[in-house]
Length: 464
View 1 (cartoon, rainbow, N blue to C red):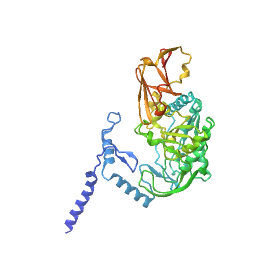
View 2: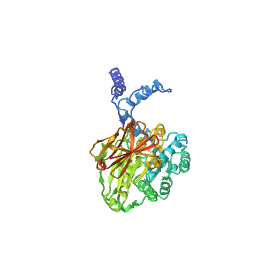
View 3: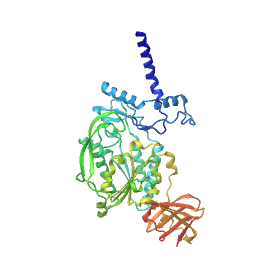
View 4: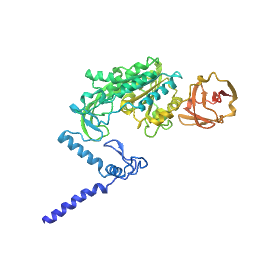
C-alpha cells in the first residue's frame, strides 16, 4: 500500500512539473497583465546583434512562455507580501510607510541623447512660433523624484541629469514648465499629489489639476483667452482601488477623482480612424468646449504622455475651446501633419522624466526630423507665376479628414505650400513631383487655392 502511495506521489509530482510545459503559451502578441509588457515572440529575436546569446534567449523565452506564468507569479507575489511584507514584482517595489514605486533601474546619466532632445524641442518651437503659434514644453517628474525620502533605505536614486538638461533648454531659449518644485511643495504642505500605492508611475487627479494649471498660467503669458481652472469647476470625490495598476497585486486605497462639470463635445470617435498615429502609441482625444468657445478660448494641440493621457486631459478640456491630444513619443516627429489637420492656436509638448529614452523618442528619428521653413522666409526669392492647371490636385475624401495631393511639381522642388480657404498648409514631400497634406474635410475648397513651390532659388506661384 505504501509503495503505491509513493508511486502515486511521484507521478503527481511529475504531472505538476509537466503541466506548465504542456500549457506552454505559443500565442502571438501576448501582453502579460502582471508586468504590462509584450511577451517574447521568439528566442531568435535579435540574433543579428553582436551581444546575442542563444542560451540566454532560450531561457528568457521559456520564462515568458511557460504555462500558468501569470498565475504562478501572482501567487508567489501574494505569499511574499502576506508573509514577509515584501513585494516580489517585476514592475513595482515597496518604499517606506507602504509607499509603492516603480522598481528602480540604473540611474540615468546626462548624455548626447539629452542634448539632441533639446535640439528636437527647439526645432518644434521654431516650427510653430515661426507660424505665430505659441509653443510650450512641459516636464513632469517621476514619483520617486518628488518623494525621494519615501524610497527604501539603500536605494541610491538621483536624477542629476535633469538640471543639465534644463541648462541645454535655457541655452536654446526654449519655453518650458518644470512641474517638479510645484509637486514637491504640494506634498510638503500635506497635499497628496501622488497616490501612496495605486499607479506608481503617475500623479493623481489632484496632482494633474495643479500641474496643468501651472502649464495654463505659463501659456497664458503667450496666448490670450486661456481659462485657468478652479477646483469648484469639478466634482471631487474618491474611488477605492483594490489592485495595483495593470497588476493583480492586492491593495486597498482611496484615490481622488475629479469629474468635469462643464459638458464638452467629444469628437474623438469621428476622427479616430482617419488621424494617423504610430501603432504602438495610438492615444488620440479631440473635444470641443462650447462655453469656452463662446468666451473666445483658443484651440490647443497637445503632444502628451501618460501623465496627461490618464489624468490631465479633463483639465485641458475644461480650459480650451478645442483640445486635441496626441500620444507624443514617435508621433511628435510628424508634428506638421497634425498641425495641418487641426490648425491649432497654441501647442504643448509634454513628457515625463522617465520617458526621455530612445525606447520612446527615437534618437535616430531626432536626426531625421525636418519641417518646412515658414513660407515668408522665401519672400526675397524671385517669383515665377504659373497656372494651377499645370498641376493635378487630387482630393482623397474621408468622413472627417481628407488628403489633398499635388502632382506635377518640378522634381527639384524643395518645399511646397498650399493656401486654401484662408488657411496655410505645409505640403509634405511624398516623392519627386508629388507633395501632400491632410486637412479637415470642411476646410477643403479647390476653388480657393494657391500653391507655392520653392525650386532652384525661385518661388513658383501656381494660381487659377
